[in-house]
Structures are given as C-alpha cells and as structure tokens.
Amino acid sequence: MRLLIVEDEKRLALSLAKGLTAEGYAVDVVHDGREGLHRAGEGSYDLVILDIMLPGMNGYRVCGALRAAGHDVPILMLTAKDGEYDEAEGLDTGADDYLTKPFSYVVLVARVKALLRRRGPSGGSPVHVLGEFKVDTAARRVLRGEDEITLTAKEFSVLEQLVVRAGEVVSKSEILDHVWDFAYEGDPNIVEVYISTLRRKLGASLIRTVRGAGYRLEAR
Image (cartoon, rainbow, N blue to C red; front, side, top):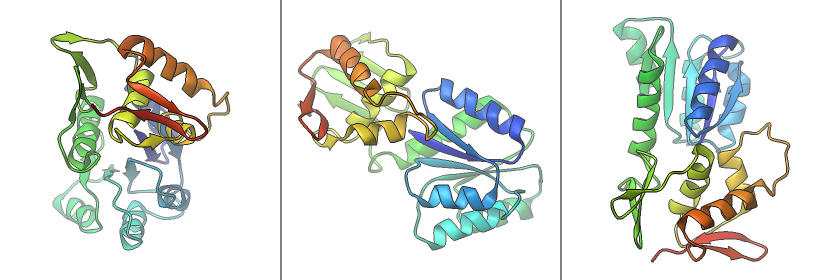
C-alpha cells in the first residue's frame, strides 16, 4: 500500500514515514498543502495522512478539493487543535478519520490499518484464500494450513499487490509504484528479486510471469 503524508512539521513527518515504512508501506512525504493536493490528485495513493495547518493551502481546503474532484482516497486528518467544531469541520470536508496532536504512534497505525481495511480492494474480506494459502491483508499474515509463512514487510507488500488482483496481470511498474516510494531510483528489476523470493517461499506455480506484461497470481 502507498501512503502520502502531508505535514509541515518535518521532524514529525519523517518520523511517521520511517515508522510506516517499517510497517511495510511505501510512504511519500510533502510539506505544503498545494503540493499535497497535486500529489494526492494523481490518484496513486491508498491513503493520505493530512495535517490541517499547512502552508500554501490548509488541510480543510485540500480535503475539500480532492472530494470535489471525485477522489475517494481515505483521508486521516491531523491537527494540533482540539474541540468538536474542528473535528466536525474536518469530517464535513470529507475526511474519513481525525486524530488530534499529540497522539500515540500506535493509535495512528491502528487508524491507518482500520481505514485501509474498511476500504479493502473491493469492500470485501481482508482474508484471501488461494488454494492451501490464506493471506490476511489486515493482519499481514500468510498461513499454509495452521503454519505461518514468514515474509518480510516488502515481500508481503509485493504479494499483497498480486493478491488483491488475483487472476489479473499486475505490471512491474504498478508494483513499484505501490511498494516503493516515488524517490526510489534503484534498479526496477528489484521486483523480480522479490517475486523470485516469494516463489521460493510459496511455491513456483503460484505466481506466473506474463511475458512483456507483468505477473499474475493464479486464483485457484
């Protein structure tokens, strides 16, 4: 999953990005409301963490502009303010949840996971059954029967992109966009490395290469 943090407190933004990256998300960070609107408007994010007090354009206006343009990306608003009026205003502009600073990082991660789970790939269950495997995208676990298969955060994120579109072809660039952040300038063949690792752990027949197009997870 790819997240966008729009927060002008740079230390906080980078701290959140570091923690969420460790959770397995691809995270981009911007510090200005207008830049946040531009990035979020590109439509490639699964969730936006949006501060209210921002230079250029405040969070209320960013959120309202995204909703007016038809973007349904989940938005978690952050603010140093408190009070019912501020929360109501944030939710009225189309935010999905609201968190007042200072907040617990554990609570933020729980809110992020809840919003992503609520949205889901199509509003369905986060547990996907693939033959002998069960992939829980909410708990980020893979089970073969009663045995859990240990995956790194990045391995699971790559698998997740295939799982939520099981039976479809997912291109290498789509995987890169959602698993690695926009600043990644390394070898795009890194995707092949992770696909190879997943095949070794899950079985070679589960993920098929569609030559010139990408990868398909066999829904069986």
